[in-house]
Length: 459
Image (tube, rainbow, N blue to C red):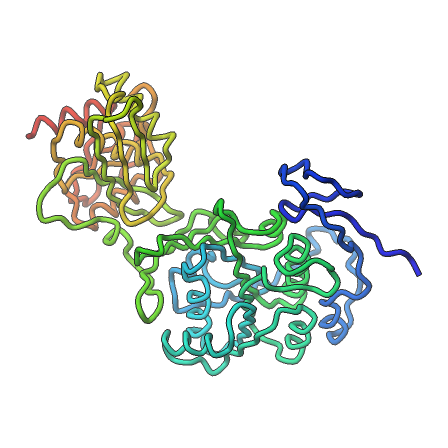
């Protein structure tokens, strides 16, 4: 009998070594190498293959000889969920959903499963009991007639149930709780996560069954387990939001079937998650009295234009070093904009504490928000109010110039739909604008100083 091949695997990052090491050369952690089995005799996924029809070994084919049969995507009643997946659930896809504990990952997937009528769904849970799932399902709405619940963590047993049940959709909650008998380490280890994900990926591709995996995250905010987990799956979704706020954001970070910039917004209620069809309304706060330091900017998330509110507070510092705090906005970009305002405009901000906040708990990185951020900072510094009917859409360069942004017509149309009367953009976007039947006034400028002087002149 041949000797089983083993290797030492770092339980922190997945680095392999032929011998034991005290310190991992990849991540620098100590005492994380564990000897694990590399080759197995019987793969758990073979249970399904042995009972399926006989398959011949794959052979190389010419590209023009390959035929493609398009399978319809499985549509959910949740349009936000369909959007981030690229138009619906793709047959044979492997989708990973990560997020902080208690953010609502299990609630979201159970709600999707309950909304699907017709497909046979298997919900595999390793974290909750059947009674807990039933209580949540009763709270979310009508019980689906085709939803099966399985409390199991052993992959060999799960594949036996898959053979008998033959579901159309599988939900695994969570991948960190599964374990395979072929690996000696415990559930949640790097090797177990990698092995279980490989088994499920093989099953999904060969059977055409879509599988959703719930993934835990580390204290740094990344999905727990080896990085190969994110490479294996077809789609990676990140469920974000503050547990103390009612809004949740479902963001696509990888998608082989659609855009990687899509965004879905939900409102957490007592009876589940409510999709928000018009996010701009919740991202713009209502005020009885005008206040300084507030400006409205436009961003693009995937194919969706959004208008969001930026709030700034600039005040004299009480410390030797001024504070720079940004919530939902890139801190490095904030420092760059402050340097531009000081160098090109002469505003003395080096001795000022600066706090910048994106309302609604959303995190943005669209450079088209630069002009709105600058106007918000200047509004707070000068204590001058910006009219709430004005919005901005332009990138600011290091020379203080306004740079053109992409898909300006969509941004203008969204601002017009929400009732804004005026929008400031770069003059270099002039060729991209369709002026037909626009009720909103489109203002062109070459520098942020020109925008500021024009707005302040009206006061």
